[in-house]
Image (cartoon, rainbow, N blue to C red):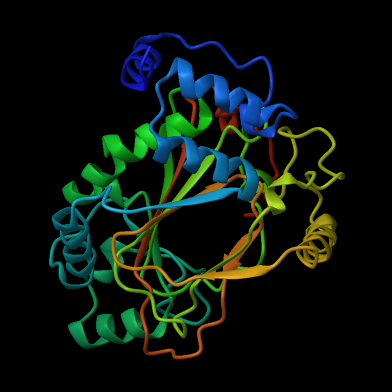
Length: 311
C-alpha cells in the first residue's frame, strides 16, 4: 500500500488504538523497520533519506510546504492585532505588561483601549508571542490545517498526527535549552513532532534556533520516573534547576548547531532533541516564526495531568 493510502486509512480509523510500543525510530531495529516501510509504503528516496536522518539526527528540514501567501496573510493579521479598534475576545498577547506590577499577558480587550503611540511602544518593548492564533486568523488556520505538514508529521510517526499547541513569535525566544517531551504529556513517550516555520529570512544576530543533533537518543530526566504523570510543568519546583543542569551536561556531548533559516523553511524535530533560542545580539532584529506540535490524538494526555502547575 502506498503512503497516500496509509495516510487515508489512518485518518479514517476511529477511534485509533493507543500504540503498544515506542515509535519506530526509538527502537533498536529502527533502520530495519524503515527498510520495510520503504517497500510497504513505497517511500520515495527523499522520504526514505529524510526518515533515516530523523532517526539518526533527530530532525529534518523541509521547504515549500506552506504557501507564501498564507505566511504573509498570517503576518498581516498579527500586525492588525496591534492596530485593531475592535477587541478580539479571548486573545492574549503573552509576555507584555502595561504596568510594571501587572502579570505578563495583555488581553486584547485592554490593548484596544490604549492610544496608538502606547501600543507601538509596547509592541517594540516586549518580545511578545501569541498562543493559538489560528483561532483568530484564517491564514494561520490554513497553516494549522496544512495537509503537507500533517502528512510529514504522520509519515515520521507512522500514524495519523494532529496539530496542537501553536505559538507565533515575532522576536527570538531566547529560551533556555529544553526538550519538548519534558513539557508535554504524551504516551507512549515521543509520539511528538515539533514544527518551526520561518516566516522571514533569519539573521544570525536575531536569536536563531539552536539545537544539538543526535541528542534525541538520550534518556529522559530520571526524576520524571512516572512520566507522563509528572514532567517539568508539574514537578516539584526544586527539580527545575536540577533538570536544567542535567540537560546542560548532556548537551556537552553533542555539537551545538544554529539554524539560520530561510523564509518558508520548516524545521521538524524529535521530542527529545535538545534545543533552545540563541541570544539576541541585535535588539532591532525580528525573528518571525510559527511553531506547532503534532501528536496522535490518542497519545495526547494533557487532560489527565494533575497540578499544581509551575506555569
